[in-house]
Image (cartoon, rainbow over all chains, first blue to last red; front, top):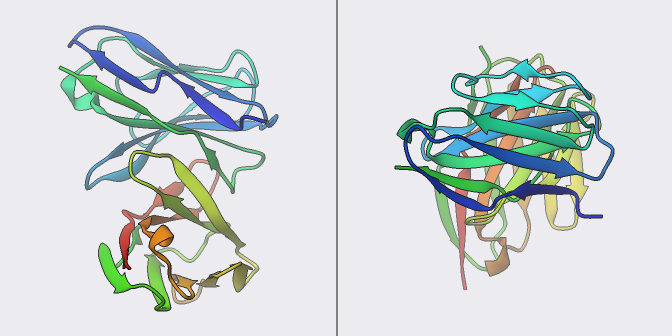
Length: 111
Length: 111
């Protein structure tokens, strides 16, 4: 039972490049979330999903897109990376809306 | 708008002391409150989840309390150890998409 895993662990992008972050969970959870964590800003919700095939915007969705084609996977895409998207990205999953399990994070640097 | 505050931002105590970490929130209409631990460069590990109908939860040397009417939760750590050094975050669940994290308390236990 791996819990929540994230791929990749680290990535450096140049401004304007695109990439996809993958989150996978093996706990059969309905809910999945993407956060970013920045110094002094805490954790902020980017997008979330309440089930396979659904997505919704969180607090800071601009510049990101997501997809949940399979229940166990939640993808976060950056179409045209900007330096302001330099951050640590965390994925979380939960069996209901009110308790979360987090992945180890992806450290992204955009130069 | 829900706001979550954790004071102090940093705390250093000698090993063996009992200590209390604080989490305050402005809107008492919450479902759950969850305490996490985050080690440097790592993801968030869930410590305790308190449902809105509960007053406290205990796990080993940890005890978390919840007072919705005053908008406060405390995390009590008994007989602190150097291994308890980490950042502790609280998260308040107001709805499926309204999950607000505090900025955390960075705890250092001196041997």
